[in-house]
Image 1: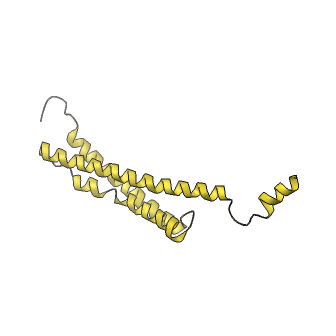
Image 2: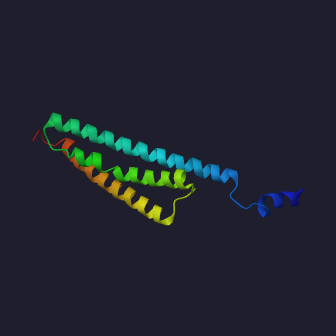
Image 3: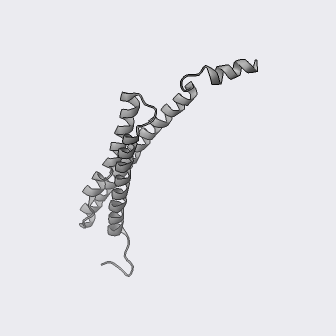
Amino acid sequence: MMFKLFELFLVTQTEFPKYVTDSKMVSSILTIVGAFLLWFSLFLVGIIAQRYERVLHKKTDWQFIILSPTGIIVYAVIQAYSLIIVGNLKMTDMQTWIGYFFFFLSGALSLIGSLRFYNVVKPHKGGAK
């Protein structure tokens, strides 16, 4: 009995077990969905900044806020290409470096845009200026 289990799980297995491939597939799909949700939320912040610019008549750089999260979409497209088109459970090294570079760049630019917007809408001490 013990020998059959050992043979079944360790010796005769030539590829990844189904539960491993299924969990990697689910995690890749959740990564892609999460990237699109993050992009959408930052896009909404850009729309809010545009409306604040119209109301306050102060420059909020809303175009920068809307365009800066596109690196997140690039990362999601690379991940989807690797998973759906190529059929890899994991991105290759080159795909990983390119995807992470665009994701990091997008995050940094989104942070800069959000801080610029915050500086426009933050309340001033000592009355209106």
